[in-house]
Amino acid sequence: MTRTVALVTGGSRGIGRAIVARLVRRGYSVVFTYTSDEAGATETVAEAAASGGSVRALRCDVTDPDGPERMIAASEDLGDLVIVVNNAGVTGPIGPVATVADDTVARVLDVNLVGALRVCREVVRRWEGRAVQADRSIVNVSSIAARTGAPGEYVWYAASKAGVEALTVGLAKEVAAAGIRVNAVSPGTTDTTIHARAGRSTRAAEVGARSPLGRPANPDEIAAAVEWLTTSDAGYVTGTVLDVAGGVR
Image (tube, rainbow, N blue to C red):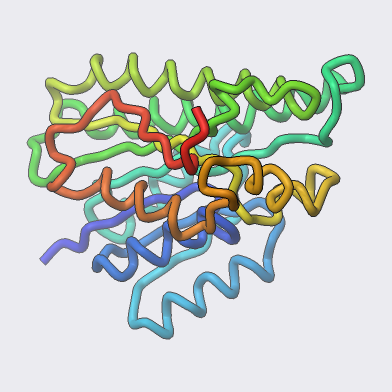
């Protein structure tokens, strides 16, 4: 039997690693990408191997000119690619708009929005026109910042995620007739290393404490929503942005 395959961008840590683990447990072969976190990539592969899963780590930046083509080719080498999760994301340093550098804005938009769009474009090119043999699903990871705007922290990041949500809604309508579902998950503040990389390691606890549930999410809670959107239980769900934000709106 042809193996079914999932592609996860940014899978070496945090939410991405939790998504990889869940899809492996569901029986998918998984290709995940990373840019520089060799240790995290190795740990993700080892965890999957320990559970009997099949995982391949691919060092590849979504902004590379041939990045989407390489990711999807590597996935199709393993079998039938049926799930794509655009999870890779960056914020840049925390601060007001007046302090942000041009290269930070460019990098955040290139990774979070342009990168996701290019991956979507490449997979749609592969899937459109093919006979539908399995439920094919794209899930984009957004952020509640798309709605709150993240003032004083990273408005440029919020803007990139708002673009991801527009991409999700528009593409879902465009490719529905081809049997492709496109959805997004919008996490609230989640306890990952992204906050330390942005310059405020305590941010998850501080911001999470102000949410209605009084805490940040853990990565697996976000991954659970991503996983559900890829299942047949969500077979009539497309063009939807699913909030997993502890009551923040």
